[in-house]
Amino acid sequence: MQEFSHVIADPAGLHARPVASIASEALKWRSAVTVTRDADAVAASDLMGLMGLDARCGDTLVVRVEGPDEQEAAAALRRVFTF
Image (cartoon, rainbow, N blue to C red):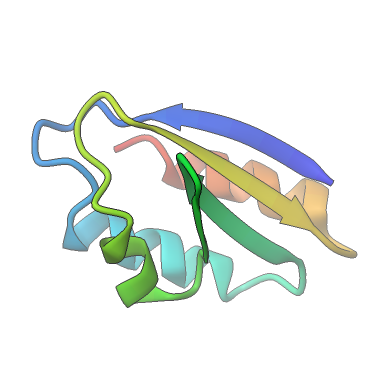
């Protein structure tokens, strides 16, 4: 399992554009990708689930990647989480 954290710096929080980028990247990999905020966890490929996290500026997201291509997937997702 690969895991990394991301603190949201965008004043708009986790909005539609980064959500679409995250979901699009997550769908490219065979590994399961989960994004967690506090006690809420959703599949990274779930657009509405990601929006439902209601993550705001300063919140920490934890991204977990588990599967056959987890190292490559985690590296690619780290690049996406630069918003």
